[in-house]
Length: 265
View 1: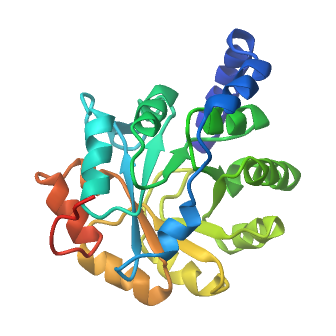
View 2: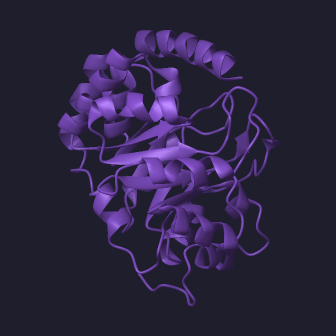
């Protein structure tokens, strides 16, 4: 599945670069407000684990989840009910997101920072993320050669963004450390077959140095999951599907953020 997604992303990028040159995107940076401090938002929290709440219409494994989702309304719900940050999926083909989703949310100036979640392969996408208002980006170790990973990490940091460096196993943790990362995400979803094991984070969290902010991603559904991950060393959790599919989204956000009452922003 990962290979299929990356092949499509490369083809998509070639079309994008022809229709909107990099020089145009770089000029847009002049009018974008400075990025917020994504890492500080994860570190300064009242709960044991900060919640990164995700805007997500679909997934390759589950198909459509919420096709009519208004991401702007959802982002407000997340921010107003205790999320420390909002993740916005911008992949169009497989997750039914868009950069316009990110731009709309960034334009309203939420009190929490925004993560652009996508399959980022080139510098073009890093500039694109900042121009759209992202405060942080995702870089997936499994999708990038070591030199490219370091190159994109450094570029994001130069632009003032934080980077969530995503790993899936011990070898990828070693590869991630070449960036000297400040945030590492452990994805419980296997990107080859999209199966999910919460145990992935439980096993890998203790291997990450304590001065690095560790984020557990995927397959998190209950408060018990949150506590188990925190006990293993996770500083934050990233949750999408469990929030999107909840019958009462504000209540589910407060539950997973371990907040009893609605937060007034």
